[in-house]
Image (cartoon, rainbow, N blue to C red; front, side, top):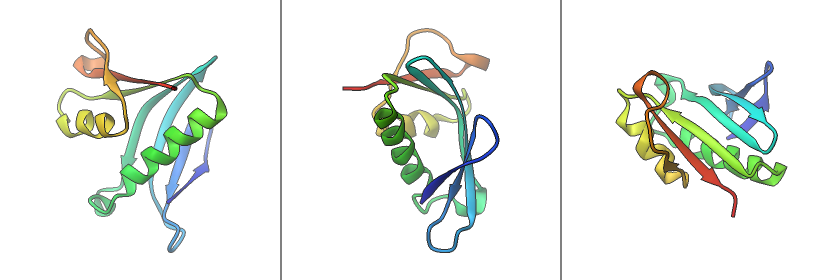
Length: 109
């Protein structure tokens, strides 16, 4: 996998093997922090590790760029999203997130 810059605030997830775009990441940045609004892999490409690889690449790139805090959101109806972000080293924040979901956060070491 590789991440390619797209329109402002969006990054494409591209498979190295064939250059096919298999998903996207939507994010916002502020001074010192990055907020991941969505990390979506196309339905036909799920269960092959694309999302995990993209998540690891994104976290490593954000930390290397100097973001001290990375936040992600998990919708209330997708428990697997919470587990996904846990695997990426994120921890839940107290209180309700947007649309009844949950905010998760990772701080650089």
